Length: 147
Image 1 (cartoon, rainbow, N blue to C red):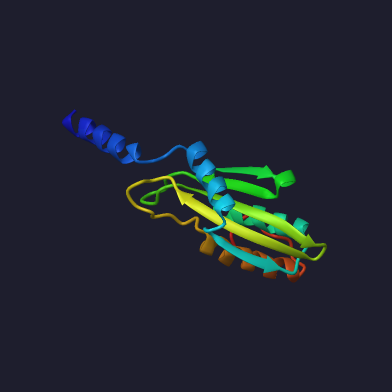
Image 2 (cartoon, rainbow, N blue to C red):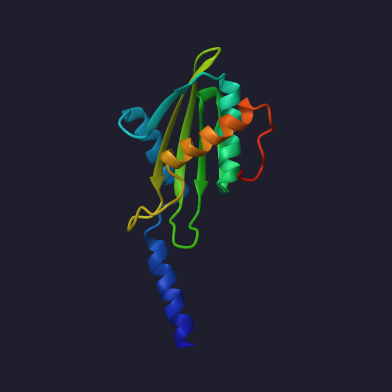
């Protein structure tokens, strides 16, 4: 009984630092408006292809939720706490520059206050995006599971 009580208390303490998804999503959107965070890259691909690759990356990363806002050129994805990694919300903006070029910006925020340990970062997003781009350019279909 004492062990169960200790486990419950430890769980409550560890989860108390985790922000809810909505609050962190708002922080990601504000960060984009500031223009001072994240990573931005330009690709010589149409926006539709960038959307497909982005969705594949999120499937490969096993995010909990994907919230697309195509009319506003962005998608939010979130992951919850996994093992020792706190959850993350990542926003990806897919902005067509012309019919064959797209600017992509990725910004992530951690859902835990105590430590920024996560796997869903802009750097990792672009590493996976580049893998997806190579697969797509080779004429193969993007797989559902990580290559």
